[in-house]
Each structure stands twice: as C-alpha cells, then as structure tokens.
Image (cartoon, rainbow, N blue to C red; front, top):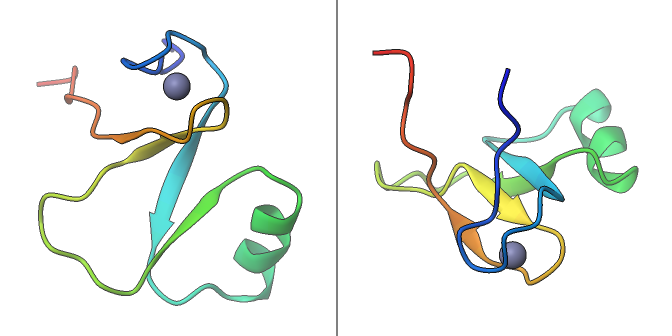
Length: 65
Ligand SMILES: [Zn+2]
C-alpha cells in the first residue's frame, strides 16, 4: 500500500481525515494524532487527508479503479 504524500510539501506525514460524529475510540485516536476529525458536514468534495507538516488538506485520487 502506497503512503499518501502531501502535494504541497511532499512529506508523508499525512493523516486520514474521518468524517462524522466521533465515538470514544475515534476521539482517542485523534488525541493520539492518528487521525484528523473532519466534522459532520460532508459536501461531497471533501479532502481525505491532512498534512501534519504544513496543514494542507487534500483529496487523494482513488487508485483502485
Ligand atoms: Zn504538506
């Protein structure tokens, strides 16, 4: 599996963004810095990953189709 790379700064310090109301597990993961919470509002064109280095949020193209 390829690691996502930030298109802005090129780092692989990139976290997945999880949308929806976070349960206790997800909130704990966010506190540990394993995921980024995207909130409950979904527009249909939301970024899927967030860069930890520069803060850039971006949408990864699907590479399985
Ligand atoms: Zn970046």
